[in-house]
Amino acid sequence: MLLRYLSHQSIFSPLRPAIPSDALLHIGLYWRADTQFSNAMNRRKIDPDVWEGAFNHMTALILGLEVLKSLVSISCSTSTALMPKDLTELQFPRLRAFDQSLPSAFEELMARLQEMLWTLEAWVSDVRKHEQPAFLPGRKFILALIGEVAAACPRLSDAVFFVYMDEYENLSPYQQELVNTWLKHSETPLIFNLAIKRNGLETKRTVGPESLSDIHDYRTFDLEADFLEEDFPTMAAEILFLQAHLVGVKGPIDPNQLRDPSRLPERRNANYVKNLLSAARNFLPELSHDDLARGVFQDPALRKKLHDRIVRALGSRGSALSPDLFMRERIPQASIVAPALLSRSTISEKEILTEIDKCERDEDNNFTGTRNWVHNNFIGCLLNLYEPHSRACPFYAGFETFCQLSRGNLRHFLELCHKSVTQAASVNIGFGSPVPPTVQAEAARQASTAFLREVRTFGSRGTQLHAFVLWLGSLFALAHQRPSQSESEQSHFSIGSGTASLNDDDYVFLSEAVKWSVLFESKATKQKSDYEPENIDYVLNPIYAPFFNISFRKKRKLELKTDEVICLIRGSYSDVRDLLRRFSKGWDVEPQQISPSLFSHLQDQNEK
Image 1 (cartoon, helix red, strand yellow):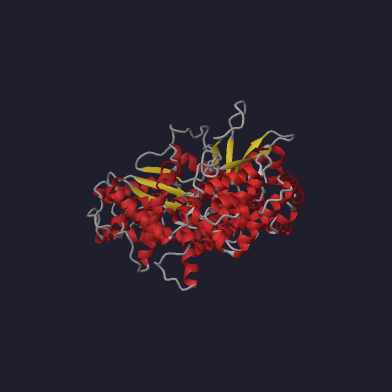
Image 2 (cartoon, helix red, strand yellow):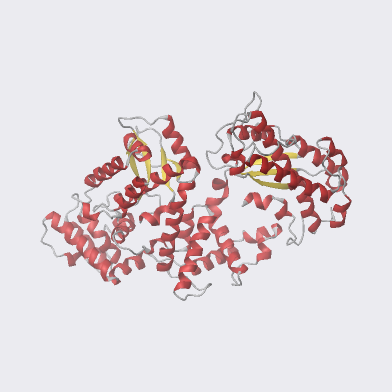
């Protein structure tokens, strides 16, 4: 999205009322690598140097076309540097030095470069039947074209062209080395910039003896750390209401304001942000914890489930106390937490009863006081109640919740909104009206399921990543069903010592999981011992939380041994099944309490 914004199509858009005077000093060329086509330039008994020449040729054609298209964008904008009639007069005769078939006139040159690109694509698709075309020398051709543009258009004599390459990590190794070389030798008037997934820069080699050097040859900008995590809700709300405006639903934003960089200070104004986020919350309302708790008491099935959990916990203690003593409608959150407390041997049922009495009388108590039983355990206990049911938990509803589930991914956020609106329309709620939390929760589960299926397409290890997410999510789901909820809301893990060691390929796999945002890395914040070495926490992407009915919040982590991580990465179905059974026994989760989904998708994966 950022690269497209910086490209000439956006900067010189006809919709812009004014073009900044310095825009001509920064002309962006967006290049999204065609992964399938680029990977086809490999092997098939063709010498590597031929494929290298073909990739250079493709670069010359694609970027050459983009340079010429940028002139069209400038001429169609409010900029006075070029007029449409000026393009018909442009001549680039010296380019024939590269290929005598290249015409001099602007429009004819564009058409010829497009024809040459089609010829290249035909040859690459069947190198045996088509004659190999003559190759242009990539970066050198682009520099020559830019020089010709500067000579023919004096107002563009100081123009600098910035190539924004997307999906770099999907290129073949030799292609990455070529791009690395261009990056290393970037200088005016042609600068290369790469958009790379985290851990996507797998090699820093160039075609020469030197390798890329951070800071000396390039600088890294972490978009997530720089602004997405902090400003994402504001940007997400703006895009949500912009999409609504495009289909005729008025909202709190002015589209022209969003398109005008000079009005950015207005959008940073505290009142603007406050009103914008307020409108987003009204459109996608969420339930308070009190409302979530009251919903349990108002639903006969959930109320019975809560009653049964209290009965089971008291029975395991051999207690003669009535379960109704712990079911208090006036304090529903404390009541929902009660079964977990009753399942802990460190707390007596009489102490819990005393504290719940105090809570109901609004006296100092351990539920809402210093020990914070409600704050620490409520969401875990709530999810525990919903797990066996087919409905989605409304904990997954709300604008802020959608932002947290998306974790800076606008595509995920918009899909959550889209499915919410679609679900609302199916029950006759018009677009623009508030979407009920129950509808949002079901939409979140549908989106989560769809994005989970998508993991199979994530690179060469997609199938392995998909199985890993299913197995890890099942383990977290199992952890959420512990009767005691002693470690509630576990959604991330760390790797501790075990009898086996992770091999190089296991670390490569974890790097791939981070690269594709299946996992996020974060520095360990809580260590059980002062002598424990500094560690890394791996957080499961929160977009998968609704599918597994687990918490999307980073609350408590699960400490896994290396043996257990190895099992999740490369174990067989039976290995993972045995691992989950061991955990279920240790967590005192009875077999009938384990949702069939925990193992059904594992079985599906095994069969595939």
